[in-house]
Image (tube, rainbow, N blue to C red; front, side, top):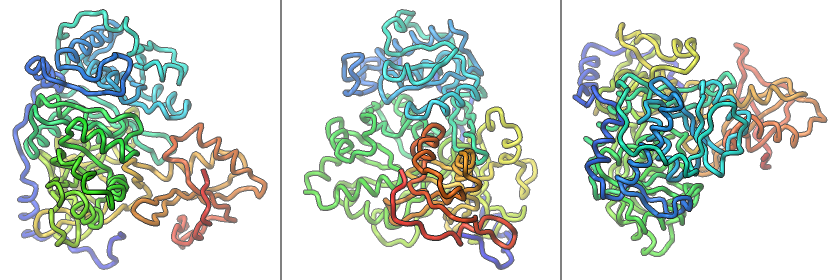
Length: 544
């Protein structure tokens, strides 16, 4: 939604006082310890309880691990990593599927003192190589299934190999501080290369501490791990349970796209908390709609569903209430936040009734403040502007990209001395202290929760011989049909199949356009910018 053309209404003294009240989020949290120290205490305390369930993992030959069994394997790996030189500031990459190896690898890296960098095994080799090089990775953790995905000159440790688990099971000494890196997650970049977001322990601990305060879990809860680990929502799935003595249940790889697999896993393992990207929630609800009541009743163990990754619409919530929530008492919560601010910065508990017009992104979480800025000034309540984030959750910045860090993490023009992250999202304060999301101000989009810079797609396509220009857009035809369309200016004899093959070598599958349209020239606005609104409607053919 573009900002209105009328002069913006700047915040008055009364507005600023109310906004300050909305942002009163200062809350004590364990800011003097690292994440692994907090997890370690629980691993020792709940030694005999079931920690993780992964009944599709055949490597260990068991469907679950207790806290003691998990801690032993994690410690053995941590000692191996320490011997390989891993410590504070070292980034260790993982190229693994959803499995016991994944959680052992992540926790082992943290216990060794390093930061983990998750990489999708489905990425093209060129992209994997770029992430490893840009991350300065010297140690790579793999599995049998992924060991041959990339030629790597550093140290490769196969987590499926029994030799990894011959070291001491004793807890290694903690060598980190809360200001050390916990993880680096790469997101799509507008320059054509992904950018690594660096998150410190204290930011992650604050995020998890808030979640436990707002939505308490305990040893009776089962968290479903269904989000791909290279997507930042996975972070709370991967760690929250371990801080409370709960259980983590792994969905089979690819199961996040299979409604039946989700239902069966929830029912079998009594999952109580889970996450959906809104578009996938819609797919799941459509699957449930019209099914016998017994199918929905299989989901009765789920107390709460969190939704994030893209806009949650009123239609999503009404459908959830009608099909699922009203039948089982399950509640839906909308979360909002960029990777650059440690997963989520605001929350809104969706009403269980259908008497609403909008679904806000909510209020700020603990130790986070939100500002609506336009032309360097705070906007009045109800006036659109760019959403800016300040507080403990802000990332250290982008790895090896000081210029972009300085561009996106800036001094708050409306509150000098305060460091903020400029989201590029347009939003406004509502009178009740919630924030309404209105859209993007640039050409970054989210599809099924995965953040995509259209500029990265465009720049990659422009590298293909015979193409002189390109514009990529997103076309949404329904809640579930969201397509990337690439308009290319090219030679008339250009073979699109060759272009598609080229893109598969350089981009992950979710960033490859669904449709390609040849055009003579990119239409432009009077200011010379690409005029996306003037592009022709695509022909209805699938491009992949």
